Image 1 (cartoon, one colour):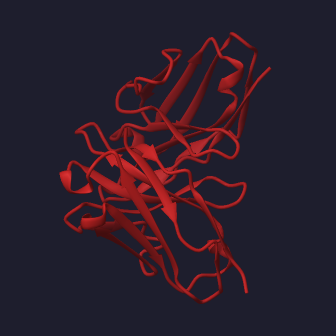
Image 2 (cartoon, chains in turn orange, yellow):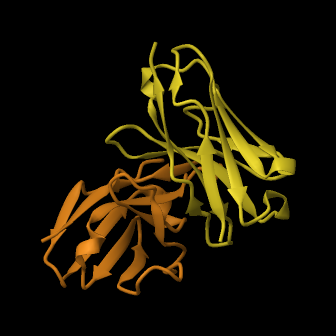
Image 3 (tube, chains in turn green, yellow):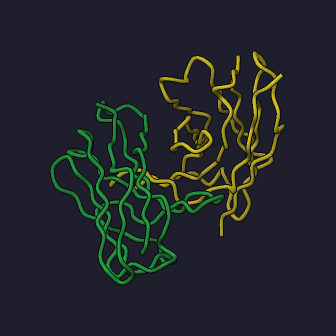
Length: 109
Length: 122
C-alpha cells in the first residue's frame, strides 16, 4: 500500500506531551520524515531518519517507529507548536514514489 | 544557507500547460548528492509529491501524474522546472519546490521554497 494515515486532529495542554502517529505498510521497511506547517507557510522539516532533527528544531521534538507506525512526539508542547504535521515516506514498492500522510492538526490548549 | 524560490504564472487556462521554475541560491544544483523536487498542496488539503530530478537529468514522477508531468534541470542557471500539461481546475494548488537529501536511511525534503499559488481558470 502507498497510503500513510494520520489522525486528523489532536489537542494538547500547554507544557504536556503529545504523540502524532502515521500508519502505513511502507513504514515496516522505510523511515518516515516529519514536517510542520503553519498557516500560510511552507512546510518545515522537523524529524528525519531514525530520530534526527535539523539543528534549528528544538529537542522537544522526537521521532520513533515500530512496525507499520511512525510517531512524532512533542514533549512539553509550546504555543508555537500549534500547526499541521505531515509524515512522508517512500512507497513500499521500492520505486521512487514518495507519499505524504493525511496530516494532523495539533492544537495547543 | 540554501534558498529556493518558485516563479511562474499564477493563472493558467484549462487544457493549457502549467510552467514553473525554481531558482536555487546558496548551493549549486550541479554539486550532486541531492534531488530537486516539486510538491503541491490543493487549497485546504494535504501535500502531494509531484516528482524530482537529479542534476544529471534523471527524473522520477508520481505515477498518478506521470503522463502529464515533465521536470527538467538547467544547471547553468541553477534552476529546475515543472511542466504540467492539460491542466484542469483540479490542478489549482500551491506549488512548492524543495531540495531532497538522500542519506542511506531514506530521503527527506530539507529546504523548501515559499510556494506559489497557481489557479486554473478561464
